[in-house]
Length: 136
Image (cartoon, rainbow, N blue to C red; front, side, top):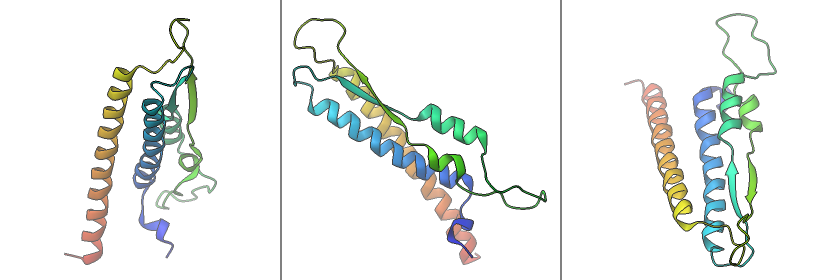
């Protein structure tokens, strides 16, 4: 049996979300590290809308021929990569650095909170799978 058959689409979404949140954390850390760099344009990593659309699409290459067949895993979810968007300084004042440290700290805290919640959900799903395998 293929190991991917053990995991449902929720597990695939959680795994992809962790990967994307890690990339988001790297972009936020880069912004914070360059807060004093003249001319640096703050960046954001946008993926939530793409992930939401992939989950809603339920895209699969294999057609289910019977209602009791298991759906294919992955598909559109695996193709979500997110995109980095630059936010240049539009004020024309100062050193043209567009990093707002207060905003970055809030975004970092929010991203960390979502990451931790996702890891807890994934841990619970693995616990359920372990319980099912042990047959207790």
